[in-house]
Length: 120
Image (cartoon, rainbow, N blue to C red):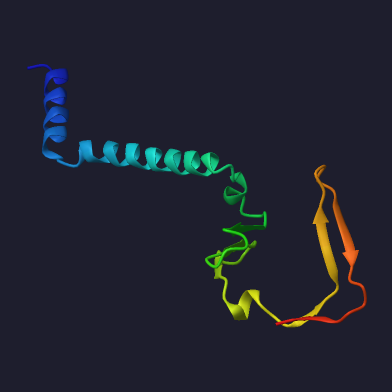
């Protein structure tokens, strides 16, 4: 038998003896698929800022509702989720006036007429 024949036989036997040879490729494919799925999910919500670690972002879910949530992502800090309660979203104070949004998108502030309207 020639040298080439013996070397091929050794290489073929080595591949047959390692049962994890095919699993390594499956793991690589699964990792690529999971990263692609994560990027597609972020892009579908139109929030590519979530992938940028240096950018701060605040998201308000269900604004004005009882189950409103505020999601805060700041650089170097863990993502924080605030569920609105009377202690977080409420407070006491004095109303200073009213703001109105016009049809063209402009916001107009009208100060109160001097009466003390307390909140809370």
